[in-house]
Image (tube, rainbow, N blue to C red; front, top):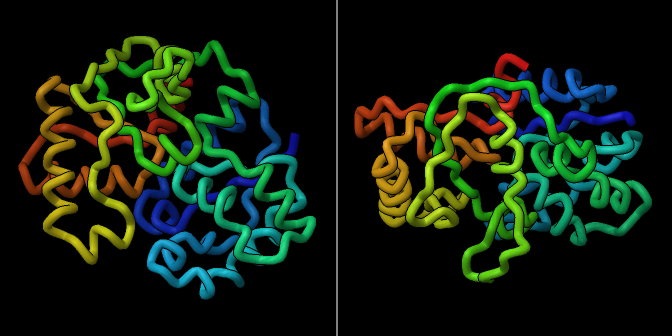
Length: 246
């Protein structure tokens, strides 16, 4: 299969190591991976801010750039969810229909397309999983406790449980929002920060060494709070853990 690597803006600018780990992991698992240099923002920030009309050109551009690939894979649940669920704002051309169907968040892709069940990774630390809202509820990446459905599966934890040496923490509130919310953290900073403090406190209560998740934007928010608290708890995207010593 031919995979187009979709790297969101904030990862490109602030966390390039996550993009590199995604590329390396897909290669190691046998994918033919290409990074199309013509890619731009998917349009999520404008849409989140109430300016969906300003993001139409970016959606069309995304369709043009990524339609040649069998799958489009990215390390961001929120951006993937935007492509899948909100590209109805533009005419449904063949390009747009193909990318809406073919765009996958990396952990979802590994579990449900590649069927990975034996990762040869090692990460000997206690880890807390942060389930970001868009990926968790928009893409169904985790167990939504309010549904009380025993058939639900967390794709992130399915993969992390294959990592040798890892210990996963049991949080009191495993699917609570961290407060980032994109532009929400700008327009409502006080509420956003307090929500983030609450999430960090839940992880620290379990004595985790690392907080991980599938959205670097939320992890960036959590990382900022940890730094301001002078905490030694690390933040890593799940793909960095899955790529450890693979």
